[in-house]
Length: 283
Image (cartoon, rainbow, N blue to C red; front, side):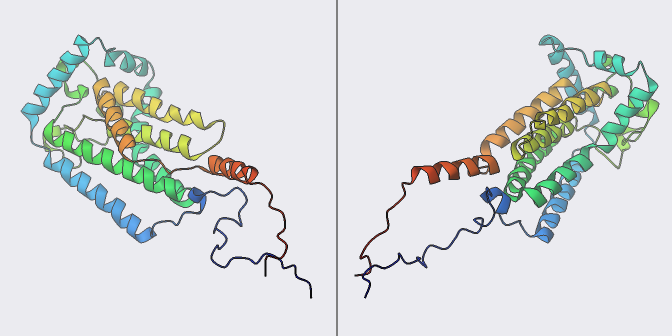
């Protein structure tokens, strides 16, 4: 009777669930959160934010006092004037109309598309991005409640044109103090810029295309639009960037991406020496 036995397969070490997919990583195969729960969560956060913004209305005198302070601070630290960007836009009616359209129509759809794509293609990155956006939005809401700020288009000292009212389209009412659709005194921080920057960072981190850095054009264009249309000061974008940086430091990225996971597995396989067949192991 042959004394040699083949090494038995261990039932206690099942094959990892992503082993059937060459080069797959935990991020690509992570279980997606329940769709209904995520929809309710996102909608709930949006409703809380909108209600919170409305609670911050009615502080007109304070909003204009803060606007003068921000304007004077920007001049004191020699930030470029917002008027330079607006002057460039006003050279063309079509260009300023396009900027107004971008401000009104891109903000929410771009962020929603970003989250949907991550949910479907990068579940682990989706959870990370959703948490970051929730933190930034909550911090922004606190800022809107504690520091109401009139935008530069409403500040006479700035000498800027309200391009939304003059050229259209606009998402704001003519009279800010009685606008039932939006809080026009919630300029700082700028969630238009904060969300756009997060979309770009999230797509750069979650993808591996050599062209992925072009996503930075989205926050850059958003910055020029929010300043050129006189809806935000430079400081609004700077504060939003700082809040996003804090949120990114608090909410950690998924440990590995598809590329690094694949290379790490290859290095691990290469480092394990080939074991000789055991003789008489069954005795």
